[in-house]
Length: 403
Image 1 (cartoon, rainbow, N blue to C red):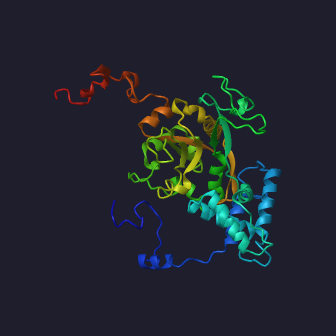
Image 2 (cartoon, rainbow, N blue to C red):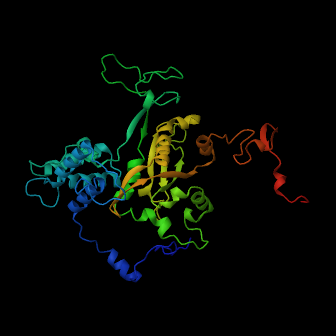
Image 3 (cartoon, rainbow, N blue to C red):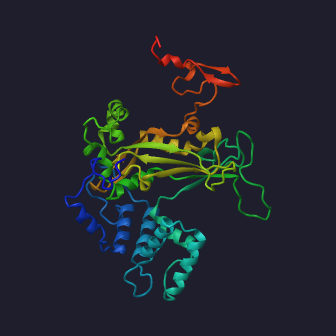
């Protein structure tokens, strides 16, 4: 890597014609931004048809009705966006203040208890008739209308199955007969599940990429701005991408269809190496974006959070994601493209999985240890028992015959 490579211009980025000195000088001057207008833009991105005429021109005649619950959420957000933080406050609305505070909480990794303390201090500083929430829980309820929430799915204690869809009402595992809930006091009204998996639906996150003016155009970069000059800058330059386009021309015809990469690995969130505990997040990456964006943290979508090592049963926890990916491939989802102002059917496909070798075994189902540990040779691998361990022989096959 070139040490002076601070301004990226070798990956087809669009640079301003101004000199670097002028660019530095202009970057140091912060533009004047109205935070209330920014929050209204966010609401319009989330509810593109709620504030405009839903009979606008579309690519087809398929109507897109607004759900009553969704419209109710829109009205609540709009009310908070127009309500002053306290009488006479023109710079902050209730929703703007909450968004700013929650942004700072996430950016500086503030705990919920710390956030509750400072929120209480701010509330006492403001006039007594202010509308600031008193704690993090109330602030989170206000922001729930913006979407991108998550689901809690109960799992068997022994990783046998999920209590999901047709098994959602069961109280015991169908395979090991283990109870779904922990043994608690009889006076306790709420049941505590043995194990919970967090699932973050993928469809609304992919739709949000097209509902934002910042990313809707970039999602077509791989088709409209990519240059075919035999230089590998992006997965779209690779042969796998091109072969997929030749195999599925209908999918490749619309550049807005999303190519995804799936990655997972386990880690110890507490940093204590002698503890046998690991958390397994499963991430999805949209490779439609240009190379200087597709691997940024802002576009990494965590879809599944497994709070314990799933072992060989990771496929059990992947079922909700696989169901959603299958539906995105066969049926797609109606999505509003803000760059064109029209509706289209968004489809998606997983092009690659990115793992280390042990995680590869868990995700693919092919063991990477033992006599058939090579996922390329599979049953044709040459292996044998030697000196108390499995050894892989036949490695001279790759040398010239007269070596």
